[in-house]
Length: 339
Image 1 (cartoon, rainbow, N blue to C red):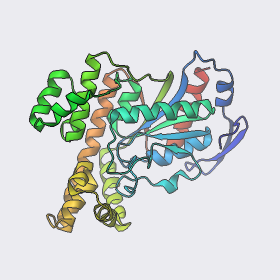
Image 2 (cartoon, rainbow, N blue to C red):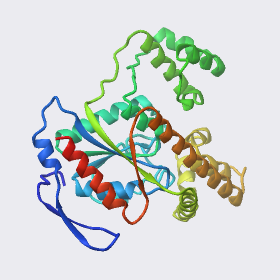
Image 3 (cartoon, rainbow, N blue to C red):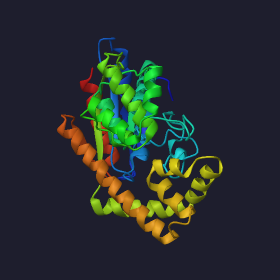
């Protein structure tokens, strides 16, 4: 899978069940790159239940690619059904930033950005094509707009003083240090709140910044009609419940994860935890969770529009029988123009 791809590949398109043969161009691209050029990155985004993973796997197979997940919850081990990892769909395609930490460990934007840089450089050095795939808007935006992130090394005395503060006091300190604070989750969890303050203080001290690798990204977005998204979400939720999602949440709690932590993970873990605690009936849990996921999809779309307003160009592709063909053509054109 990681070897040379300067050969004919056969792809069967679902659109018409015909087989199309073509020469993949990235081997020529990589062989003619210099260290001064930007490495290619294919970004694939879309709202939840839009079919990102299956499309990414098919494209990665065509272009000898590897997938870097941009999902804030798929990093956690044991959270499989609720986060929709669907690892069986990856077949033999290598993936990164999935199942890398325990659910009781902390993970944040800075950790993701650092891990992305390592994964991207590793994939590029092996002359495979990196695919950044997911729906966590802030993670995608951080990479594509190269957020200025400082390496926080908290002073011990400062840490002790901050830990004595109340949550409301810490929020006031963070806003004073960073009036443009854009990650609301940092203000909802005490550990993240403390870390956000350390990062903001480090930025003011001119602490070392994360160095982003040089890359040029083609951004593909999957466009799905609102009613179709709603249908997909509800259908997928029913399936996941049948596959054992309630048992997954129950197992996480049994193995030591607190109700508070499950609530922090949101959506499936929050509402199923409330059901397990007896606060919600099964029907109430399903209805509230279903509505919450619909709202989440709308919030994802807002993030993507915000990214476009920042100057990023997203090439939107309709989720139809021609999706694979259109995405393949976009990538081929992108790689040719990068030479």
